[in-house]
Image (cartoon, rainbow, N blue to C red):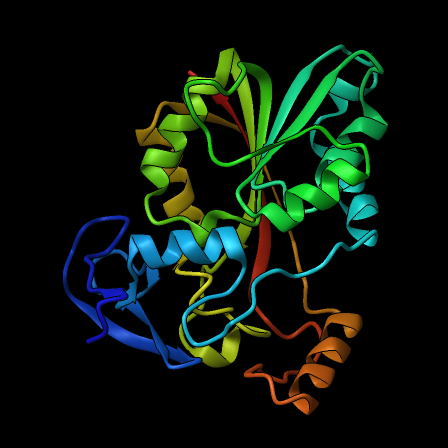
Length: 276
């Protein structure tokens, strides 16, 4: 095995026993025999992972820089309106930190809904994304949560769960930056009822993505780390446009799965939780 890889136990329950679930880009996703959590094993080492996160390229040349997507702003605004009506309708003055902010689409969505005197900032480890966000007038901190990170009323993490090696530790970091009764929004995928690779409508994005949870796992993570869930919303992603994009990826030689629209049990899951 390469010295850039490590063998691990289940990130949710620590059981060592698992079965192969899927292969992609030379990496394996396994399913824990005890709790059904899905995770990459072996996975890139912490050092290898840190380098990829900062510079945007994984071992083997897998590019993870992505791109700025303006349509995401409208998508996020729609979800935020549904999940936080008590925050936007009175136009409360708030502080909000988006963790793993990328190019800043979520921050733009929050800004458009919040009081003009609110402080909405991001944290992002990839310099290229930080530079882009700053050029667009977005306040963003390069790096990770630290002792210098300001306290906030709200925090969010949009589609970064699958990137994290230790979600328990991450939630403890989030607790540290939240004020008393602060709230946290998590957006990720719900792998519930998924028994085989054919039921997932697209690419897993290995080895950039290393962990895949179901709703039961996410509830467990929140509960054991001192959060109470306020609300949960799920949306499907396998619409006609998503299927069309997968066809294009397939033509380009990408390792994606083609399936009929509206046929997958996979859902995006949005969880609003409060710090106990």
